[in-house]
Length: 201
Image 1: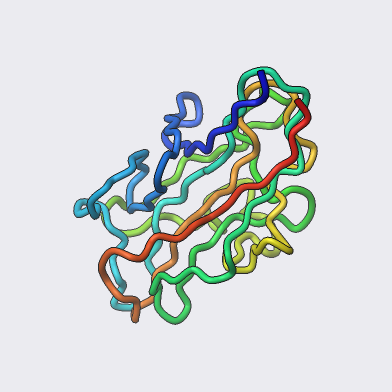
Image 2: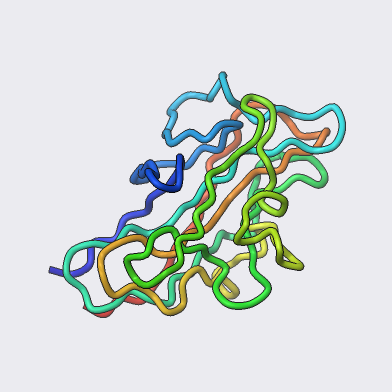
């Protein structure tokens, strides 16, 4: 049986992560929630700030690989180059970035990864802590975050180059919303983010 590959989001404590298989959407909140809400989140939305910026709590998004396979590698992630959400002038959908090597963060030890998962933190209902200040895998880098609009099919993010040879999670993309004072409130239009990878069955 060939590899079974699903997309998962991970939230919660490092020692007891909550897994949610993504079948439709990832929503970003000002809380560490694992939920696919079909209606707008009214308890923990990302507010528009009167000054400075507000942030969602970050989420780890990865591949969950199971069944029988030899290797899944060259795991990359990209968008179409335009995220049509109105974050305001300096707002963005951002992701964790490393100065060298894979930009993805290990979230288990099934394939010899170091588990560098970091639970999202912040002030619930107000703002998340930023990736660059609080996610230990990225915070020491010279460019700890980038706008995900720069990850396109021709130059995707390299999530996991060496790849996976036993069942478990791939390295993860860590995503977060940054909102500026002149953002527009309300539900934003759905956007598609894509993983691509090579499989040896």
